Image (cartoon, rainbow, N blue to C red; front, top):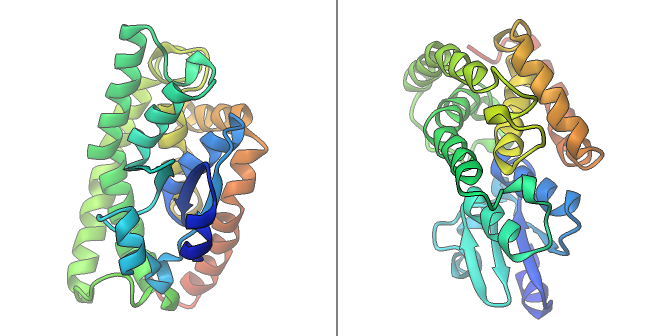
Length: 247
């Protein structure tokens, strides 16, 4: 991460690690909408997010975050809301109509407390902590604790996916919308990781898988380009799983 060079670059700066779901969502949003942003890689596995230099940009030490001519902001949902209202972005991403916007906000809030919480809890504790490259990033909680957290998430996620299917009951996208929003993008990025690592959770949910395909179609080729590293990573995970490294 060349923060010194980044500080010399004017305009909007976007700090990301594309292994992070929220970072992927913001990156896709910027690329699809032709928002000029200097993308700066922050390698979480090398703990670059914990350096004093990065903490000056985001005291929380998380990605994604932005620096827009000195205005610093973190949290992916807040970033996409901000960019949608400060750039020439099509209205369907974050509608100006108060009721339509409230539905997008509701889906984003629901995402944080449900799909994001338990999806990441499952992937981190069942997959990522088993990958040698991540051994320094996550705290050592012990295998029994990790297994308990993964099992809890695995039991809770089906109920969350049931709720998501209700949100997709009418219309092509969330809450009866005909066009994609930042909520669709954020949730779809989350599920893409689950789709690769835990196919059995999603393959029988045709409403969700159809919606995911529609979100990808609406945001390609950027969606596929940004997720390429995840697709490649999943192959590595499959190799580790074949060796019996996961519970």
